[in-house]
Image: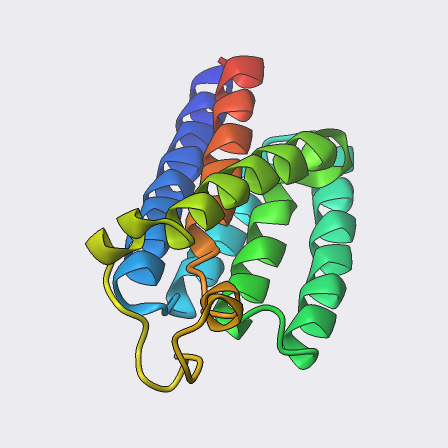
Amino acid sequence: MIHIRALATGSAVAASAIALALAAVGDLRAYRIPNLIPAVLAASFALAACFMPRSFLLGGLATGAGLLAVGGLLFALGVMGGGDAKLLAATALWAGPTLLSAFALVTSLAGMALAVVMLSPLRRLMPAPPQRLSAPGGGPREWARQPMPYGVAIAAGGLWVLGRHLAITG
């Protein structure tokens, strides 16, 4: 039974890590996170939860639901994209209440690093946002209002969480 548990949880973590990497690349290149990516994260969480204590499932569901509500509010206010909100909630399933603060910290630090790049001349190395997302004008205020592929930061936090799960269960 231990081998099946290790295989199932390892496969679930690997699938989630690949999904997060694809989310980061997709958001960076086209400012889009396909719905399939949060679905893969949720499905792999469900697979891993079958082999974990019930508290893992319940804590993950509560954390994911809470961040889905927060992400939905931020989306409604125009602060966050819908793909970012779904990715945040699906990744929070894995964080659960025990890793939520560390997930938030790593995601925030990665977001700050991304913001520094977006506000610096290094931004020219990144793909331009689609016209539908671009802010008008070219002054400093408009630069600060440009869209940011925050899925990259969420993916960094999520990869950290998955690494913690490997360290704990491995």
